[in-house]
Length: 82
Image (cartoon, one colour):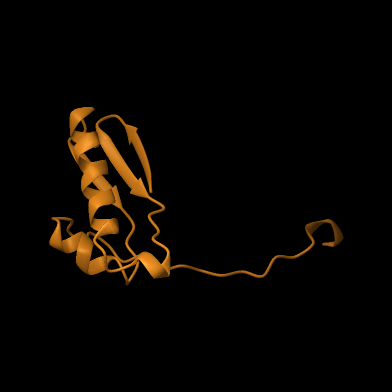
């Protein structure tokens, strides 16, 4: 997992646990560790983007949804031939 801190706001990103290690509270421990570290460094707010898999955990530890994120896909094209 990644942690970015700027102006009192922590961003928690890129959390992943290999399938064979899931359901062992590893993701929970990593999120709590990053939140504790954020607090020690003076952050007042934390944000993240949650997957469907992580949504329940995030809400259980206190994150509240503020918007829905809609991913878009575009095929890559060779721009030099356009």
